[in-house]
Amino acid sequence: MIAITSNKTSDERIQEIVQFIESKGVQAHVSKGEDRTVIGIIGQADPKLAEQLRQMSGVEQVVKISKSYKLASRDFHPADTVISIKGVEIGGEQLVVMGGPCAVETPEQIDEIARLVKAAGGQVLRGGAFKPRTGPYSFQGVGVEGLIMMAEAGKKHGLLTITEVMTPEYVDVCAQYADILQVGTRNMQNFDLLRKLGTIQTPVLLKRGFSSTYDEFLNAAEYILAGGNPNVMLCERGIRTFETYTRNTLDLSAIPVLKQLSHLPVISDPSHGTGRRELVVPMTKASVAAGADGLIIEMHTDPDNSMTGDGVQSLFPDQFAHLLSDLEKLAPLLGKKFDTKKEAILA
Image (tube, rainbow, N blue to C red):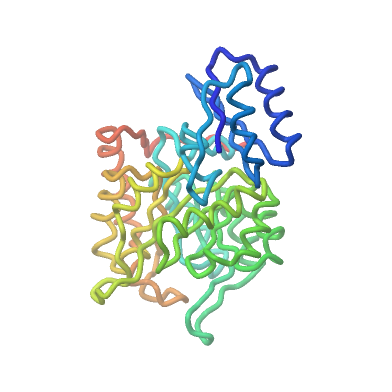
């Protein structure tokens, strides 16, 4: 349930209400908005608690929430969550672009791609050091060495970095080198991994499982939030359907639906969502039109010879640059800001 107070209720009174709630053996999460403060109540509450709260001064309303995900729900947190990472804000007015190869291959490769991402106006360098592959004989990534390569390239060119983490054991080492940790579609319901990610504060990009419902997706995010990490982004990366022309079916309706159901930033992945280079550009623009807060796009200097074999969905550098130039014109029409000439402010 949630307890709602007005903006006239003092901070001291809100703290008293929180202390009363927690004295009943449940957790209280405070979310302050311009017009009201929402106190979310998590746990098995005594049925009498709702009536007790209604009688307390400063409490305007008590509402029971039927959704299984609480902290991810917009009912609990009416205002959009904005995640700030070294001067780059994700979930606010700024459109954020994450670009780079599917996998880190060599120091020279990731350095050159980082330079191109920065030159085009991107803010985040993407690249996998550990790769979960469907086939056991496919390229699995270069491991910790790849994390170091990407961290150095990101620092050199003034970019944030994002990389995929596959197991709880590697969360700490990945967080040591990367600014954002990605949970891939195959791990969306790896609950041990999600619980571990809840114990750190490093932002997490959670990809939707390729056969998952919105409810399952948001409950996966809830695991991380419930663990204490509020910095979660939701990523629509396409779902598995009967269509075989595209690698996946990019569910554009997921973007406004997730924005309606949740306060968390929503990122679109048109590269995995389509699996076809010629579709990445139009679906990127469609994602922005649908309300995405950011994009994660594959770009490679030599996609035909990429070690992962996913080059067919990777943009060439000139295509990536032209796309970002188009986004600079499109974003303001849709209430977003995107300046390809603006330098990211990295601490």
